Length: 181
Length: 452
Image 1 (cartoon, chains in turn brown, orange):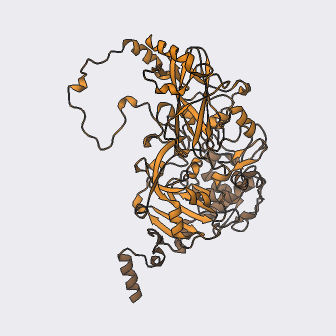
Image 2 (cartoon, helix red, strand yellow):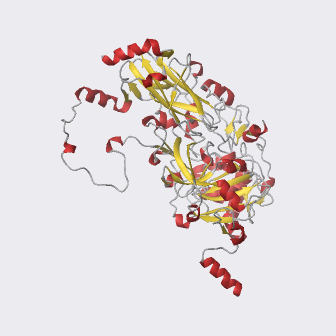
Image 3 (cartoon, chains in turn yellow, cyan):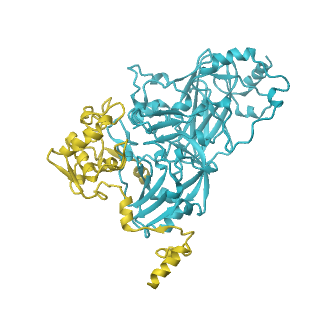
């Protein structure tokens, strides 16, 4: 009880007791501690190895429904793109051709990026409104359109990072190359 | 005309390169007069008014009545209302696009805040700074949040630096030269004085763990823009800007908080910054994999092309301008490099056969716009002007032929080739490629349409 009072007093005078110790001597030290739960709510970054993928899952069939409702206006039938939205699937022309088609299947190096960008940025008219299951589903549908998974496959935190992307090795890390010189 | 006598005297002794390029030290002489340049849009009007211009009497009307009262925030003169950004955006998502800085209508090196270029992926969020926090977490000893009021109490630094979108000048990859005004295809570059808190100070406070190699920066816009940046850059000279040219950053440039990574491509300077996740590897976000990577003729793509390579551009005379008569003219333009300072800008008036060094406006600053000027006598015959920047690493801005040979034409980003301005015998300025570059196949304008 006494400790709680002390903490309340410290907060009242502007000192965060969780943090007070480490602030001494090292600059202004005005940062505020934050709980792991709160960080988990903020952090929506998904890495190629699957770090950051949430619980939940989705299949191709459900993804097609989401796609036709929320994505097709910009990205077109079967992910073929429109004048205003990226082509996401159906690449015919190779990357070395005069008119290369840079789709998820032909160009994107990691399947996890699809989940990450759909969850954070799509649909452009109402970003961040899809449920995790819907994001998994529409990711599954897009990977299916690119012949990267079969119609029966289910995407979740364990299966998505395992999807093999044909162009994973198609990139030159210019920054690393220069550092190595 | 008296002007021509001065010019003729200058010519012989001061010529430093072919087709009338004159010694930059001529600028030290008094009494130089330059020929008039008009813009194409206004040239007819200008021509007609020039002969009949009636100036006001010795004491014009505005000297006989009180002027306007004070204003709480100044605006440009109503007679300058054509000096504006040029927006091009996605039809379905109007918040996804760019607006170009009118470099061809400006002088000096600092971009006024209202003219700084914009690249938004889904509009400009209107953020209440009282409700905005920055979270730093991940491979740190303490995860911490900072309010804007907190950050305003930290020691600050200022730096003048340019920011250039990786997609700037991308029309240069097209087979046909763009005929847009210079700023409207090269103006996704601007230069401001940014003031804020060194990122190293905050990274000290959270305490980096040994495995910390990258940070993932995230914006609070509707795209939730996310980009990975190596930790060594973060510790070197990156900072969190709160002010732009002395006032708080404009909403369209990241209010209330913007990450500045001097000299590195624009998209890394994350606006509306809300989160920095310290990691041991890049997140491989959409905008560092599917976009902002450059597909090469081999089929491989360049990735993490961070520093902006040296580039220069003659802003006047430039496309859509008209030289009114054979005369002495002032060539002026901008040069910049993400690798330090510009050491030299060379100008050619004979399509690259001969070159001479332009005058650089002091002070020449690290990773900033550098203004160059060169006196030139135009003899009334067709001419091709070029400028090329050389930076302190010795890097020389490439000719387009050379750049296209190295990179192909499908990379979309990081176009920094020399721009040619052709002046015809009527004084009309247009954009041309070198003869060897003139590709005769069908016009391909698809490259600069993809802002999504």
